[in-house]
Length: 448
Image (cartoon, rainbow, N blue to C red; front, side, top):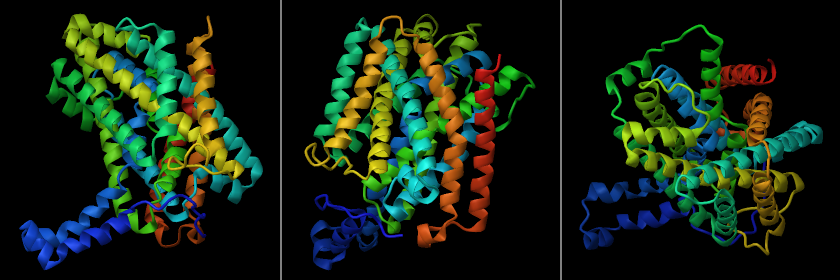
């Protein structure tokens, strides 16, 4: 399958970077820099780092406002008992995201674009329409998270959300791919540090946490199984699968960047679940330990940390919620803009200027604006909006994973990046397990 044409200005790629780095192996340059011969010879391998970004950003963004709320509730209700589920979701996240990244590397196209071409316009329309509805609910949840976090510092919700909407649109439309990725990575790193600090300040039982991480302590109850489903379902999302493929294509990575891309996805999966683990540990060491087993959202968790672990822990937890929600506010509408322009065959990408890709940036601003208006509607039941987005996510995820695996089987599409039978079997097994969990989640949400 030929990769789509690219009219954007040429930028350094991992391959060109490797060519530049190879020049450092010249004896004259080596002597000038006074580098040991072994170090100088290995410098070109650093070019693999240039492929990093899509997997880490996608992983960081999975821990958005909804994810933080889920992990806080799980930690408050079950303590350390569900840490094993986070470890299991790490493996599932790596395999599903790795397949998406390979599709982006091999084709240079987004997931929704490939679904429309290979499975027909009806399936393509269904996937896009359902994802846009779910993404709207997810974006509303990000605004709710921003408003909740800043309200702890005395900032009115309307002011917080209006400023956040303007800032995120300006960041995505006035920057470049490199600047946006740098901002995303910086925000994600801030989230990681915030929740690592929160966990340390909570003074948890680290030995007990390590035990529950590797040895499942399951109980046969509907509530426990629902918590497991929610933990895994929060990590793997339809928009996350679409995002990593479109973002990989937008970064203009090539098949030869597969090694770096796998490292990127692995790093993203590990960092994502580290943050999730820190949130559960912080909640377990404070809320669960002191019998506060019921909390409505992440804001309540942050407020409860104050009397139990100190004002600093409360502040850091709230700042983590703010940063995570802002990162989600950037990535979820961006996924919607990618998907829509892919379906319509329009110019898209963060390296384009607004005048070069007006539809892409116009849709991006539209998706952000609509969600912002929803949040500011007086009396709008935000909990029900977020509930519906979870239902859409849960219903769409099995369909998306099946499409991803069907595409991954097409050797004419992936060429040398096609998976072997063992990896395909593992992929199908994970897709089946995650799909079963998603269906179970939807059933528990809808049925009384």
